[in-house]
Image (cartoon, rainbow over all chains, first blue to last red):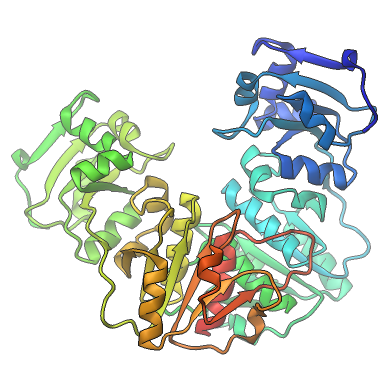
Length: 262
Length: 262
């Protein structure tokens, strides 16, 4: 970052400041839809956003010396906030004192023409921590993109953002109707896989590693919608030895994805 | 459950009631250590506790009709509570209205003589949701037991309990010093595996499935303690294709355990 004059940095000391009110509103989906913006926080995620050339609209820090490590563009508005304000706008108990405001434009709605590669589709996944961990896991497995089907928690929910750890900057993220996506995968020759426990499902042991597939994971309690399951190319299950009746959906996603991409 | 006379059931309508205060105190570790008791909540977990013959000291329900589905012993004290009290003692936003008090005696401290089978050791795992998910994953993989090393979050933390989903009733849970446990594994001929990223570590692809192993997973930020890593039989890593720098520790545990037990 170029040196900034002191006058470029706005100091905010009151929770009643309008900026603080705006940032606080971004904690709710309603607020994010209205402003078209969301807040990321913490060194690692803000750094990832900068390194992946996201447009940082605003940067908020509790200490001016932090700015030296955060090479933002000249267009970025910079705010020096108090630790109290940091606590107020944070979604964690012990904020690191580094925040940024980004556009909520990462979501793509149109199914792309090129569907090659590996994909994860989320059918009605509700827990924000699960969603975020699944995005991070898909990123680690080298997937192309993720489709948030209807019912799945909002990508910009602060808990989702926290558990994604910046993986939203590494992959394309879509919202859409999973059945429509499945039709497009069929046309593109990409096989679709659901997860369920029944006679037609095969053990994931039998997956042949591949670079092209679409895996559909379903709701924490009810699994994948039966209407989806009947249209997949193959449904999979994970054999369990113990007494637990099921795996956490993010853990199951990890086991399946890493078997596919091996 | 035998029919109970109406007089057997104590009705509680005030948050100021001493029982309510006791249950609320069990949300903190200090409170649990003092009483030697912890609260479980939700139909599934309470049902698992009953089916696995845990001693249910107290059962609290918001509706008397719930009792028909919960066959507790005659020794169990039963309380009818209001939805407000349920909300007060719950660790969730929308409690199901079914709670039970159990002894915090599941933790074993002595290293058992028979160490055969598969084990998971937790070195300084801090997030309660991660801990609970790891216990549930180990259960699903059919492990014998879990060792909570120093620094790991308390087994009876309400968030741990919620994400374990009753798996604490299916396995033996221990607290102890991981280095002492490793010495015992060595003597018993059970191989120990750590997780790290360095030249000596091998890809988990090369794991030969086995019924006897001890896997050590480490802190979310710092990984496994180097003092532990230098004494393992082998250290493992999970090859990653994408840009994410690491996997969630519970997801990594799932990938590794299901490779071992295949």
